[in-house]
Structure formats: structure tokens, C-alpha cells
Image (cartoon, rainbow, N blue to C red; front, top):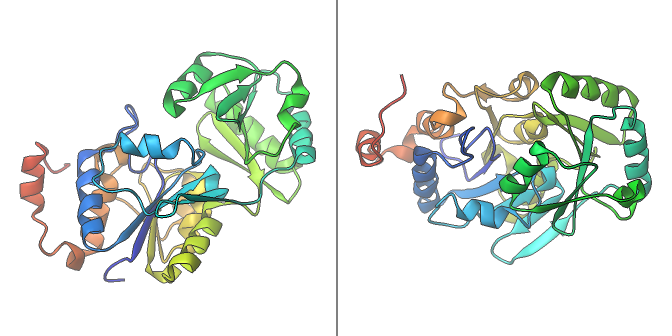
Length: 293
């Protein structure tokens, strides 16, 4: 592939830094550059589409991404029309089954998105951080049946430690129905959703809408919810800081991590013809950056 026609990228752990969750400077510049060259750009996140435009705005891009994929592929926002398409939500009976299955893990906090609010079992520092990160308020349930009062895109299970998350991941995968998928998106966060709903399906939907063949699409990710997207793309790229199973799902792995513009450097190295008139040293000087060692 000499030049991609569309790039679809995850957010956390991929194109933003770990500590501040801000887009790294060279990533921002490179995305603006390739978009000016006619390459479409989309964001694929586990977050709901309603919160992503505000999140993206703070990254300081000079353009609006052409597509925004939310809820791990359960939602697609076409930014040219403002239309949000919703796919394969969990129905109440499945939500009840999942919540009751995980009930023995009393310290685990089930969380869902409902009416732009984080609905949870109990409030703690991790939920407070999620509120700040998602720019959403939270509400502690009064009755457990609230969880399955209406369909949702996914259920998140927040744990106190990575070891606890590993434990519930093994348990969930061994006990949930084959029509469901369970995977970690953070060291302390397990998500459960419809198995038919993933970022790879969203990529194929965008391919159909745009007429861009998947072979001309490049995808970047770092976590298990990116795996199907990396497999569906013509070129699937996992960040070097990514999870082992995501590296196995990718075609290639970046040499540089998300905290040091790894996606930008990978694009420059992988598509030299696209960057023939891009002066990297001058751009780094303008950004007051130096090449990573």
C-alpha cells in the first residue's frame, strides 16, 4: 500500500498519551497533514459517540474526523451528516444474565452508560476519575434491576487491581454465552458486549459507505477491543505498548509507544511517498521536539 485512503485509530493508548490523555504534538500535526492530502480519518473508541466530539475538540485538530466509531463499534457517527447509527445493543434479558453471573465478585463495580450518565453499583475514586475522563456525571443504582431496565451498548466491570480483572476475564470467558464477547480495554476494566458488535464490523460498514476497499484502510490500536479492527483493515498496526493479544492480531507493531508519537512516526516510516514534501526536522523544531532515541 503506497498510500492509505482511510486511517481508523483508537484513542487511549494509541494516539493520546497515557498520563494526560492528550494528543501528542506530532500525532496532531501528522493527522492534519495527511487529511490535507485527502486521506480520510476516523476515530474508533469504546466510549459513546455523544461524548466523543467534545473529547476530540480538546485535541486541537484543525479538522473534524470524517467518522467517529463509539461503543466498540456499536455506534457510528457520520460527521458530515450528524447521523448516528446504532448496532447490536445488549437486550435487558442478557444484561440481567451478565450482571447476575458476575454478582459473586462483590468488589467488582458494574458500570453502564444510560441517558448520558455513568450508572454504577457504588461510587469510588475510580468512578470519580471516569467522570472526569468522560465528562459525565455518575449515579449509584437504588435497585439492581435498573441495570436491565433498557438496552445498552455494553457493560463495564471496573476492578480495583489488574489481577482481579484478569480473574474476572477468565471467569467471564468461561461462562458467558457464545453470542457475547468479554475483553479488557484497560488493566482494571473488563467489558462485555454483543459478539457481533466490534470495531472491525464498524470498519467494514465505513468501507461500504465510502466505497473504500478495506485493503486501503490502515487501523491503529493497542487493546483487545481493537483486535477485530486490526484484522479487518488492509494494514493493522498495534502500538508497541499494546496488549499481547492485540499484537498477535496486528500485521505490524510500532517501534515507538503512544507517549512519544508512535503512530506518527510509524506513518512517516511506512508511507514515504505520502510524506515526500514533509520536512520532519523542521516540523520537530517548530514543535520544540527532538527525535526519540
